[in-house]
Each structure stands twice: as structure tokens, then as C-alpha cells.
Image (cartoon, rainbow over all chains, first blue to last red; front, side):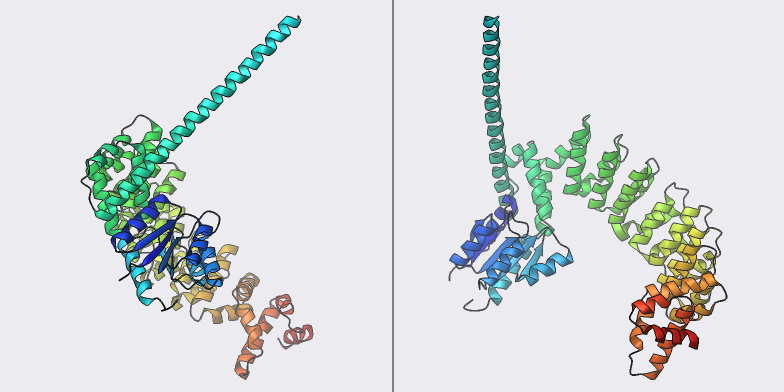
Length: 126
Length: 392
């Protein structure tokens, strides 16, 4: 069985490292980028099962990247990971096309569980 | 003369060249230092990340790195990011590595900046074993450190430290006392029993604590707040009355009703607002009487409270015929601002004749109270508004 492919987008090295190593330990194949525009191109060029993206990225907000992906027809489940946790921001992120929203501080186990849920519930052929 | 000028020019030129070289070297050294730190930090990020993922705190390297300020900063960065078991595992590792001890040592530094950094770090680490040391810092000579220590204690959330926080307030100025009250608010319900006891003491900041109890909104504070209503301290009576609006039950209502007769208008105004929040119908005649209070604030708050109490709108409507023009004005102003009058304009289009008649009655009373402009702005025909006045 192929390993699930995950794209992690975060400019904070610690967050990116922790998510990458945790997901690798959980049996995923992880690609990491630290820039919203690079992530945009990469997700359209390669197939990922789930994308984890930070909200506050340099240049382009996480939710803006998600919105562009959706406009471009990308159906990959996207989880926004954010230190901003006000209600308006969460609603806006979900409305932009994100599948889920995780607030920092987070639990690694919870993030892995959420990623697995997205893989399990992913629309076939998306 | 020309020789001298040439010599000066050569000297200046030399100086410029030396300065440029020095600047270049300094920049190079500084850049190399930054790169070294970034490299070291990246290594620490990987090490600590591995520690969290693999749950292996036994590496000797970690013990060696604990003395490095950059390493401490990386651990704190991970702590801010994590919660639950992962965070707990990192905290245990930070203790084992001697990192917590290093921060505790920083508390004893003679250097103010180091003490500030140590208190901040301990606040982020939030290790319950550091409570005693942080309580000690509430007596630091530097106000900022005292406030940071209070915030750190709130982060840890051990209710045992609430008493010390309250005791430390006595020696603070108002700004610092407010920051400590913010820390007590962050404790939430856990702090309520001790704060209620403080309210019954002679503590200097009882009004501030009464206010904070109101913000927490836990009814276990009700007894102490009710007792504070009979204090000789006007500020305390006022804050306690306001707090009972959030942290009271129907048991507080008789005391609040009595407070509508307080000699101080600020206290009466807060009592009226609190009665509105309690939404107890028995307050209606009392609030209606308060519409004739000599203070504008009390009249306004009483009218606003009547809107909140079930059945209070009827009392406000009937107050439009009150013999006291000030009471009429307070009732009319709140009926307009609370949306009741706007609702009456809408109700004019109702299919139900009774609704239309009730709406016309209210509008008629408000027009008679001098508020016709509101209805003209709302789009009612001027002739119709005049007719309502005539009807009245």
C-alpha cells in the first residue's frame, strides 16, 4: 500500500519539523515548503492526499492560498494550522475552502488523527 | 600651505579607508555570528523536535545544551506550540535537562533583564514545581517582574498561589494591582473562594477584586459581594453591585433593590443595571420609581434595566404618562434606543389589528413625549404622526 503523501506548508522551522517527523513516524511521506506561492504551484503540480498549511505565511495568507487552490479546481483536503484562533478567522478559513482548522497550541496526536480522518473521508478520484 | 592640505587630505582618505575596512570586517563578523546562531538554532530545533516525536529525553547532548540560551529559546518555542501529552513530555525533559533549574537560577540574578527573562520563561514553561519561587518574585523590587511573576503564576494555575497574589497587591500601585487582577481573572473559577475571602478583609483593592469577581461570574462569590454592598466604601459598593449583575442569583435581588436608595448616585446606577441583568420581575416597581431619580445616570440605567426584565417594557410604556417629565424622558429615550419604538413602526404593517392598535398607542405616547422626529426619520407620514398626537 502506498504511503499517504502530505504537504506541510509552514515558515516556522520548529512547526514544520515537528509536523514532518510526526507524520513520517505515522507512516506518511511528507514534503515541506515554507512559502505560500511555492506551495500553490507544488500542490497543483503534484498529487498530495492532505495539505497542512500555516495561516500566517509570508506574502500570502494560508486561507488565500486555499482559496486559489479551490478556484484552480484542487480538491485535496486542506487543514489550516493557526495561532490565530478567533471565531471570525476560523469561519473565514473554512469558507475559503479549508477542510479543517487546528489551533496552536496543538497536540501532535490530534493533528495526526485529523490528517487520517481527511485521508479516510477524501472523495475518491479528487 | 599646499603641503598641509595634501597631508590632511591623505589623512582623511586613510581614515575613510580604515573605517570602510573596519565596517566591512564588523559586518562580516556580525553576519558570521548570526549564521552560527542560526545554524545552532536549527540543530536545536531538530533535536528538540526528535525528542518530542520519539519521547526520548535521555540524550546527554541535551544536558550539555541546557546552558545555551538559544536552546532554552527553542524549547520555549516548542512549548508555546504544544499542548497535552507532548507538552508534558517536553516539560519533563526540560526538568531533566536542568533547563528549569537554569531559569530558576536566573531569578536570583542581580541583573534586572535576566530576572525578567527568567520569569517570562518560567511563565511559558508553567511548571507547577516553580510556584514557590515565582511567589517569591512577587516581592521583587522591579514592578515589571512582579507583574510577570503574577502572569506566570496564572499560567501555572495552582490555586494555592491565589492568596499570595492577593497579599502582594497591597504593596502595588494601581496599575500593577490591575495587572495582578488580570492574572487572577486568568485563574478563573479556581480563584473565586480566596478572592471572596479577600473581599471580607480590609484589603486596599477590594473594589478591584469585586470587579474581577464580576468578570469571572461565579455565583460562589455572591455572599461576599452582597456583604460588600453594605460597606462604607462607595467604590466597593458600586463595584459589588455591578458584579452581582453577572455573579448573582435571585437571592441578591432584595439587596440590590435596597441599594436603589443608596445616597451615592454611582451606586444606585450600578444597582439598577445589575437588576436588569438579574431579570427579576419584582424589580419592576422599584426600577419604575428609579426613573424619577435625581441622577440622569440612574434614570437611564433604570429605564435600560426595565427593557431587560420580562414585563418591563409595559412599565416603560406606562411611564410615558409619568407626572415627572424626567421619568418620561428616560423611558422614551430607552424605548427609542432599544428598538421597541422601531418595532412599533414595523407592527403598523401587521395583519393583526390588536398589534397595530398597540403600536399606534405606543407611537402616540412617544409623540406626546416629544419624540415625533424619530418616527418622521423612520419614514412615517408627517400628517399621520400629527394625527397620532391629536388622538393622544
